[in-house]
Length: 295
Figure 1: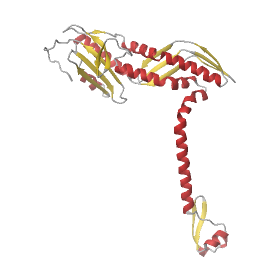
Figure 2 (figure 1 turned 90 degrees about the horizontal axis):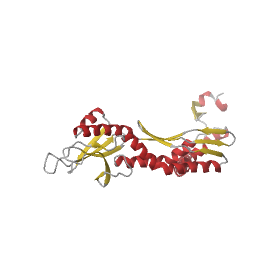
Figure 3 (figure 1 turned 60 degrees about the vertical axis):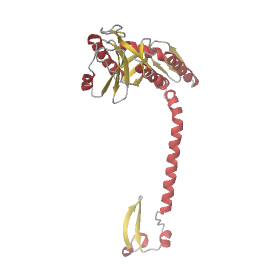
Figure 4 (figure 1 turned 45 degrees about the horizontal axis):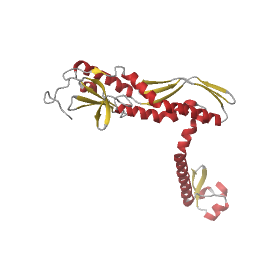
């Protein structure tokens, strides 16, 4: 006898399907049901697929709407102050970098050329005709670091206070010893270091002597190239931009000459679209003399 009392001659095929063995025979559907043999129904399969698809959509919608809340509270949930401060301050840091990058390295330029309705600071300038320019910001990198620090200072203090309140509301004893904030421009990132001592005590005690917040930006390389261009402007009155693009293949350098002898340099990282632009006026010619070109 074969499977479920059937003779071997009646069994046409044996196969594994969905983890169970089924066979094809000449048995009627009623006999198959009596013997406990059930074949999957197409309609039931379609129904299962529809239910699963609806569940996936519902979960995706919930994640979309709840993500901002999850992002805001993840630092507290993981008892990690650095994540909390990163979420709190990241947008402000990016905002400051973008603003000063458009304006030659200063949040509020005092000595600038108005280009496309933007105040672009002179980083090298000569008032007289025919003279090479004088550096206006010889320590450009340090100047920019100070500008970012001043721009985020109030928000940084508010974020620290918000951190304290959030931890206290969760039952932590919080001790904070104030320290200075350092901003450092590094390759591919801008780092903000909180020299703040934070002690969290609940079931156990954890101490944080410094916290670092960083954002991705290539202003370090752009400022380094800007310094090189400015040295050429101060020494020779002009800079050959194609040399930089031949050496740095991911760099785009635009040179916009203005009618008064000013040159606007626009440096762009082709990979990230990070930009830095600044103004220079060196070896300017009087109107009607020389081969000045506006473009």
